[in-house]
Length: 177
Image (cartoon, rainbow, N blue to C red; front, side, top):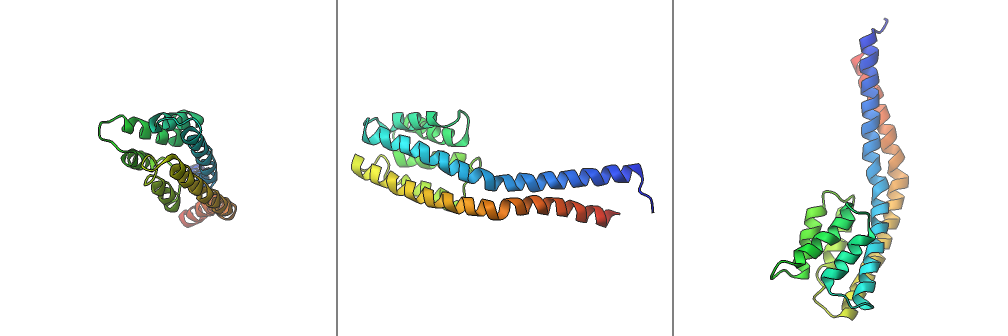
């Protein structure tokens, strides 16, 4: 049985599409460790601004925002928190929660990663400088552990999803022929 030109083109499109889908899904595993590293760097900046420079929290959030890439989800996380603090009656907890909720769909973080960040909001801006820096240090330690887990997941699953995308395309093509 000879395949027509259109069947070959259709099969090629299915193969490329499924391979791209598998690659796109695998990119989540690549992006998460990178975001966790960037987040840790931004939190270190926030910690330094709070503990050494004694900046107001709004300014510390803005400075941390500038440590990331402009327009990135992490940079916007800190920027939104700073902007929310400008509203009358807004607390640091409210600002942090609003920023997390606003950016949650743009971040490649797991639910556990987001919970670690949400817990930070309970003490930031409420307690003294020593307690805030201690909470940031605890959050940083948790993020380092989360990054190690993310690297293990990346090693385990990234290649698998790329391969599954290709294999799914092959299976669809075989079923259609």
